[in-house]
Length: 200
Image (cartoon, rainbow, N blue to C red; front, side, top):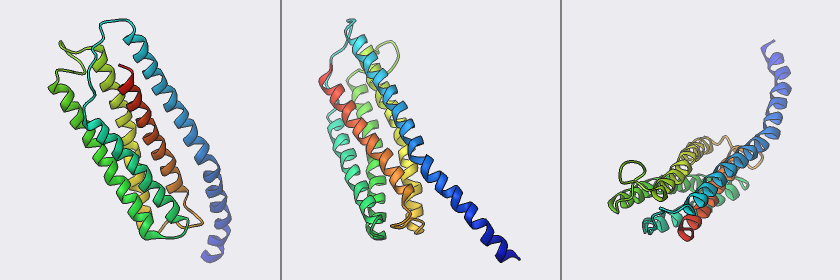
């Protein structure tokens, strides 16, 4: 009786899984569009405020260039994981996800170091000696880093499932969704870095 019952439930589970596959990407893209709008609003506000005067011009911390190189490299390691799982190459898929995670965490700490450099230059987020230019820089970086934490969690989950071989060449949606979000975060940071570097 239990065997017959489990067989009857299988089609239902398959339907649920198919529905999840159909909705997962559109929902992710909706989230990405909302993030694009958020950062478009922040950079637009940055431009408007900069044109109003009393704007401090300063150099970005040198470690920001290293941060950017790290996050771009993490996109390449994520791409390796994507391509590898499609060939059931678990070694490369796990390695790519692991390196992406390590690089993401490294990026996180280089951002903190960048803030320390800014503070050493007398550029603060808030307070008596703060300036709108510095405050906007901190805010934009903090909001991006908050989304980056979500990306690190997603990579950790994907890596764990990949290690347990819950993905395969016929079922790799989780890694694909993580990769889309990760590549977006990387591209977003490159845009923000170039924006902050050239528009001062």
